Image (cartoon, rainbow, N blue to C red; front, side, top):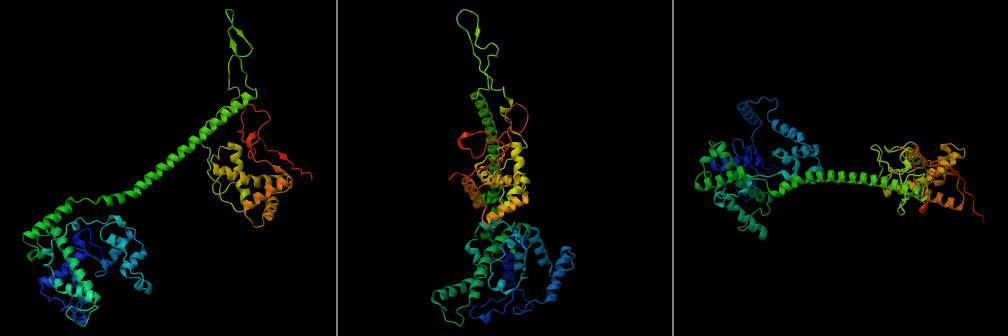
Amino acid sequence: MGALRHKDPLFCTQGALAQLFFWRWHVAGEPSPSFRRRQDWYRIKVLVGRDREQELSYPTQLQETWRIFGAAGLMASKKTHLPRRVGAQDAETHGTSLAQISQAGRWNQSVLCQAYLTHLPRQFMRIVAGFSASPGDYFLARAAHEPPYALQKQLWPWIEEWEPRFEARARRQCWAEGGLDDDDLAADGFLKLMRRLRIVLLQDLAVLQPRHPSLPFFAYAPFNGPEWDEFAVAVRSDAVGATEPLSLLVQRALPELSGVLESTREAVLQNSQRLAIRLEARLDGIQGGLDALLQGKVPITFTGHFGAGPAVSLAPSIAPTLNFNTAPALAPEPLAPDMPVVTALAKVFTVRHVWKEWEEGIAGQPAVRVLEEMWGSRWRPGNRVRVQFCRRKVIWDELLARTASGKNEEEAVAELELLRAGRSLNWLVDELKQRRRRGQGQIRVQVGTPVPDSAGPGPGPRPIRSQGHGHRGRRTRLGRRRTAPHRQ
């Protein structure tokens, strides 16, 4: 598995590994490894026992863990396994997927994971490093200041001895001085790791020095002297006063900004839709008043004054006004706050669903019959829903005609399903239209809201415009009409 540098250098895995290697090769006096042949360094362990080719035994690990827990005042039933359990629980708390936790802990050791799914579990790594799971949240202030090379080369100086040989081997495909193992990629990778751990160790100890000045590292080079002091002050200054990069702040703010813009857009669309409905209602009222005026239902009187005599009224029995409010039923109606607005009809695939949509409603929408009776055409203001309504109206009219002729609903639906024969509803609509034009249709009942013969001012459902009458614009009502066949 991999490990990112921790937000706090005290808990950093890379920093701990760098401190271990510094102690072994700079304080304990362990000989530097030789990378000429694989057998010269492959047996060297990271956690060593009595010698560097002997691994640390489990009893020793348990004893040291007991000692650390006792010094920290920790009580736990699990000792050596506790860090793995705590890491997995912490990652799960922060929303890491179980797949990433299994991959990080190597609990899923299938051939697929070992041979092909070799990507690191980065989400898990960011969380255990003290950051959130978001990729834009990882930022180390102490890593902004690069250590001078004069300090770096004092750590593990044998890196400069072996790296040129591997570089020459990469160019010439052989050792510069000759040798047996000219393809040891692991040695080349280990040297690159040690060069990186130089930077990690210098930056982490620069931050830890004020917090833990008694650490034994500061008694050895390069962690003393004027050059180290200058570098440590610069790193601590960057860590204290550093601000996150602007690009990182923008990347983190984009989801919030997107949510605000989306909610604002939805509010603007809803307000525009409500305004359009109000304007349509006003225009319908004005159109009704103009229709009444043109049909002579509104009295118009004039009062004129001719010369010095008294005022002469051309129609003294009628008040001298031009009144558009004599027919209250035609006045503009305010928009009802509880009127549903449907932007699109539900998707249907059978005649039974079309009939259910008319009678009962589907997909959480009320019955179309109820909407038409209560609100007329105002519940379907958009072009899309108007087109859908007009096409389904052909099926509704045919079903109503068949039920009006004495058939029950199930028989009418079954007849149209038989006519459809598994084809689409659009095909059925076109077929019914063609049959009507040929005079082969059933008795059709017009879908719409009844309109009384005399448009009185009394209460009642608001009339709706007839669908499919072109420029005539006349009001229609629910009635029967029989289509006669054309004469040949």
